[in-house]
Length: 342
Ligand code: TXA
Ligand code: MG
Image (tube, rainbow, N blue to C red):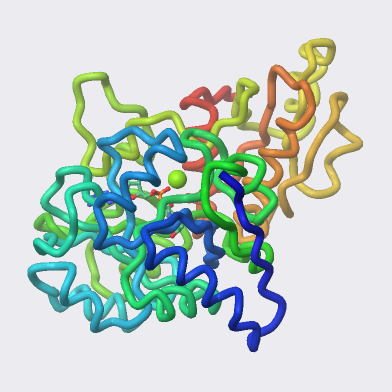
């Protein structure tokens, strides 16, 4: 299959938007930019089209997809009820990086929800994503547009390096500004629960609806017999080919640790300006005190560290305040929960 590359240069460039929408209406797959990461989109109401997403990504069949809408009213057809919390959250954060899980309606095919009786919905804020959803005239199911398990794509080039030849088109809308995926929040239990930290912080959610739980799977791996609320949480994720280890402690201790592995094709991921203090090749992923910058650069840095023939990537552990929780969570999973306290 040839993958068409559709670049969007200006707000006025509607030809490529129409081309992307046409492919989607015909049951094809198009990678689209969102403010978080690139998504691999298909018509969410067409089970056959959605099934192709799983094939192209090599995604486990039991991991459900997020449905993307362009207007709040489109939520009504997808869910059986819209609780007041959902209205408040949508008012505060849509369009934007918050995904809300609600009881699904029969309009949502089982391929989207992977057999669950709930559906995850969000309204992205990227103008190109919104225009494509509108032009397609249907909600779009879209997971991150990477090969399952690898770091999420934050540029059209990342998408092509994973999926060229496996999807119909990629729409290039530039780099993603948030850089980590949306926050997934379930409103199906007694207390609202964050299943995956992301672009909207727990404090931001709390400020709008009060009490919020954070799913324990955000911080620790599940036992084999445990069933997560969000099936995606049980898979190793965001991982480059190399082994990743997260190191907690000072820069000096990090440098010492790296020195012991300096001969083994080791790479480091560090904060801006630390490269010269580390005795192995290092890729910076943002300022030590700027979690938003770390989020934006995280997946690109993971891919860059992995481009070489590195066998081991040592990563400076980020702080967990604000969006830093999402950065920490992605690194924790990339490292298969291997954290070394220095
Ligand atoms: O920012 C994002 O959310 C990006 C962009 C493209 O919108 N999408 C994304 O999709 O990250 P994906 O498929 O890579 O991650 C979706 C996560 C998975 O962890 C999945 O298990 C969870 O959302 N999820 C989807 N539907 C769910 C449901 N009904 N109940 C619980 N978790 C669900
Ligand atoms: Mg993903």
